[in-house]
Length: 182
Image (cartoon, rainbow, N blue to C red; front, side, top):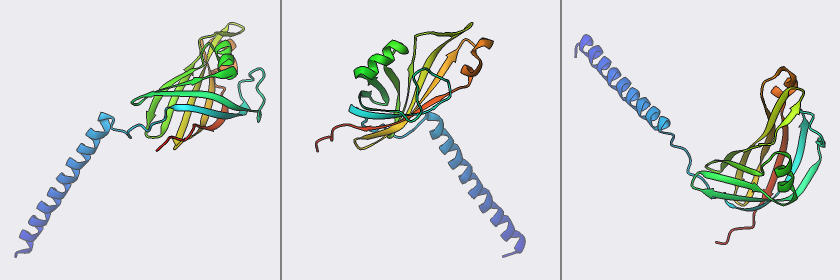
């Protein structure tokens, strides 16, 4: 075979391989854009959780770094990939009084839960007004749950808000639900 013919055939193979790769990339991009994710795990149940306070970045009253709370009842309900976490007991009552809610709403992807408790009670600091949102990021492994809570003010952006615009308080938590039969 003539070397020029061989180069032409090899270029044809290269073009064919490149076209196959391009089609594969387009297919992967199309699947990714549809939002195909992990099927949600069954995270529903009655959990008992323990919480440890992190740093008090927002200077919240009664927040002590390192303090813990134990045996907090947490009812998790789930419908497909939607989840609601209801903090119950005295802690739930406290959240209702201080923030205006004790319910986190969010999503489940695989064993990962992402949810938020959006407070409705308004606080004031000078001409700054704010509510508090608590973001929850957790993972469920069998009957165990573990994650982080991030408390963040949502302000009216008045200059009096100062540090409330960017501050965060965090808590680590873990807990369990009764073992499932089977």
